[in-house]
Structures are given as C-alpha cells and as structure tokens.
Length: 107
Picture (cartoon, rainbow, N blue to C red):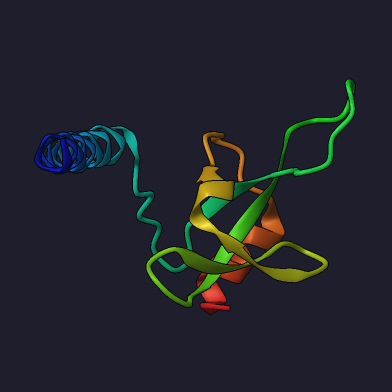
C-alpha cells in the first residue's frame, strides 16, 4: 500500500513538473518584450479610466532606461517611472513641438 502511494506521488510530481515547463514555454512565446530606446515617443496606459476617458495618454519621451523593463518617461509637465507593459509605441505622424525639442536636446 505504501509503495503504491509513493509511486502515485512520484507520478503526480512528474506530471506537475512537465506541466509547469509547458506552461512557461507557452507564456514566454506569447509575452512581448517592448524594446524602446532613449528618445523614443510612446503612449502610457492609464490605469484608472472611466467609460469616456482615453485608455492611452501621451505622447511621452523616453528619458532614461533604468532596467530592461523600467523606463523613465517625460511629457511636457512631469516625468515618471513606468514598466514596459504600460507603454506602446507612438503611432502618429504629427509630433508635438515640445517632443521634437526634447528629443533634439537629448533630455
């Protein structure tokens, strides 16, 4: 009886281990690493929004890269540190004048 329980326990652990490896592989294949460089224009996701508020605000200029996932961004009025998951590339052709000046100065 005891050996049967140990055998079942080992089998369950092997299945859990293989399941964890498979789930990690699936997650890693879906995750996207945004690679932004200093001076790039980005939108920032608004965490708190209501029905009529926009989900993305911006543009912001990337001032500094603090780590592979943390960026310091600045708009005309303030700067803040955000995770790369909260950023997306700026898609518009019309760039605000303050952003052009900020990129040229190198912040």
